[in-house]
Image (tube, rainbow, N blue to C red; front, side):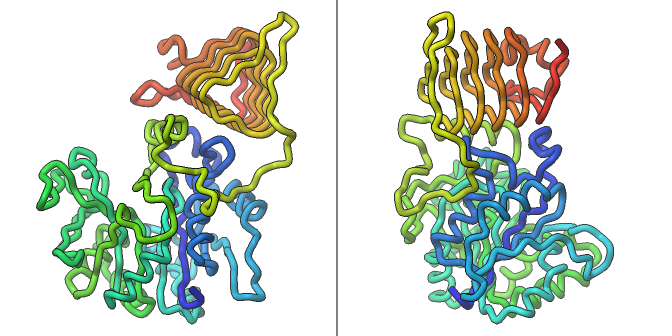
Length: 406
C-alpha cells in the first residue's frame, strides 16, 4: 500500500446534527459509548493497510484534532506511515472549501509531493466496516481510472444519495447526484444503487479532473455533482459492490450516513439489537479509539436498598450506578446514576450526572451535564420543547454542559 495515498474529508459543518455539532466537527461526535464517528473510517484504513493518511479538517476542528492526537498517533513516520491533520491552507485564495472536490483541489500540492499512484478518498462521518484493500485490488484489476463503492437501498430513501447505473461488468454508465425521483435498479423496481462516498482514483486522472473542474465557475466543485459525472463520460469508471466485499471484514453490509439526529440515534440503537447488524466484536477488526484511563464500571446498592441495574445496555469504563435502573441505553465513560433514577432508550455521553429520582427516556445527553434530582426529560414533549431540541422522531437532545434552573 506504499503507492496509495488516503484523504479523509472531515471538514463538514454537520448542521443537521446540531446541537451535537455546535462545538465539534461531525466526525468527532461520540458514538457507541466509547468511539468517535471518525474512528470507523480510520480503523478501516488501519486494517486495510492504508497508512499514509491526510485528514482534511475545517469547521470546529479542535475536538477532532485532540482525538486524533490522543488516539491515532500510532504510525511510524520512519517507515513512511502517518496520519496528518491538514487544516485549510488557503493556497488557492482566502475562501473556505466550497465542496468535497474543492477541499482536495486546495491541497493538490500535497498530492503532487506524493509518489502514490492511487488516491483513496473517504468521508470521516459514516459508520461502517470495510476492507479498502479488496476494493483497490479490483480497481487495479479492471484498469479503472476511478472506482466508486456502492450498495443498493430502498428507492424511497435513495434521493439523498448519488445514483449509479452500471452494466453487467459493473462499469458505471451514468451517475446522477441526489435526484428527486431516483431511477430503480434494472432487476428491482423498489431499490436503487447508490454511491457511498468512497472513491479510488488514479493519481494523474484525479489531478487533471480537479484542475479542469476548478476552472468551471458554474461548478459546485463536488465529487457527486461534478467530478464523477464528467469522469463517467471518459471511460473506465467502475462501481465496487460493498455488499459483495471480498475483504477480511465481516460481511454485514452495514453502512450508515449519520447526518441527522434521528439517523445518528438509530445507528447507536442498532448496537443494542440481540444480533447487531454491524459486528463491532470481530476479533481481527477491532475498532480503535482513544479511551481515558477510568476504572471498571460497577453497580452499587443505594442507601435505600435499591440495586443498580443494567438491562440490554452498553456500559463504558468509569460508570457507577448507585441504585438506578438503565434499560436499552448506551452509557459513556465516567457517568454517575443515582438512587431510583431511570434511564431508557437513551444515549448518555461522558461525564454526565443523573440525579436521584430522575426519569430519562428517548434522549441524547451531551457531555458535562449535571441533571438535578427528580428531573424528567423525554416524558413531557411540551415541557421539553421549551428547553431542548427535539428531533422529528421525538428524540430530546440536551446540549453539552447545559445548566438546569433549580
